[in-house]
Length: 386
Image (cartoon, rainbow, N blue to C red; front, side):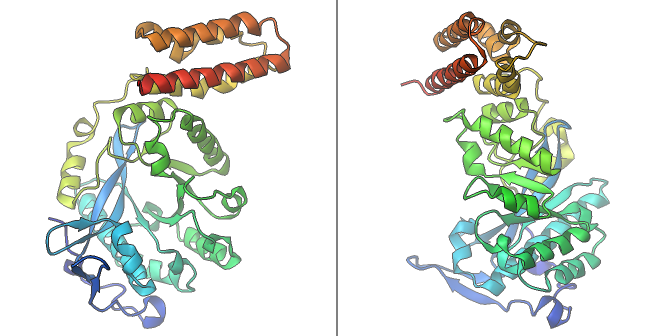
């Protein structure tokens, strides 16, 4: 059973001056339009925790605290089902609840010698309040957990991040040692200027985008571009929506470290989370092989090396087109796992090799792009046969 919020004494914000954290939200019954059901805030709210997994260390390195509501019938509501019915003060209280629940979990794990980090979602309205940093620091005073182990996740969509005041608030939070993550990158509009200006230390790729990888391998190029962008900004990329073994294989082949999704674990109640962490990496994944184990993974390994392919059309002398194709992970995978589509892809690269050595730089670049588009079409047909 999850730990109910009321089991955590409100020793921090409940006793804090009103001008710092405000009065705690009083119990309130909330109805859901169109449904013959009600639930109570905050009594029916609880947290689940989804692990954040490091593919390079093969272990859980963090958790995200996720708010849930349990109806009297036992049905559990996800945030999109109940957040629209909460007013601003309740949403702010919800963020604080998730922080407190997450901190308690970290303290329990730390007592067992297990140290991981915590992420939780922050209501955008909270960031516009002058007391957001004092409130956060006041919560942290009552715990042994350092702010450096806490990440506040903000949604990328919306206009609230554009104001200078919000930038100042975020900078003040960063100066406490806490991390700021921009969540759901790719779900709305991603402003490069915004990313440049804000004190962001982590970027979370939208899970809906990643979930489509099995249906649209072109998204791998987008993930790689976001990874390059994050590296350039000095930020850490976390890829959400890693739901299947083939997507996990593909993301790992892109040399992406931090992942989150059903391929690792669904959101868990605390006892399940504790059991999973205690079992260590053997209870999660046996270890990811260096070589791709799926067609999508093989294509991802190819995408990782593709900048080298493009450089060959611009006079690159250190590596020939023939060597690139011969050593291409996708080509090697298809040779080891023969299939009709694989023969088509190998034929496409053979044609590229025959034509590329006869063409100038511009024409060769165009020919490479045409071949890559052809390979993507063949891969899509192979993954989803009629």
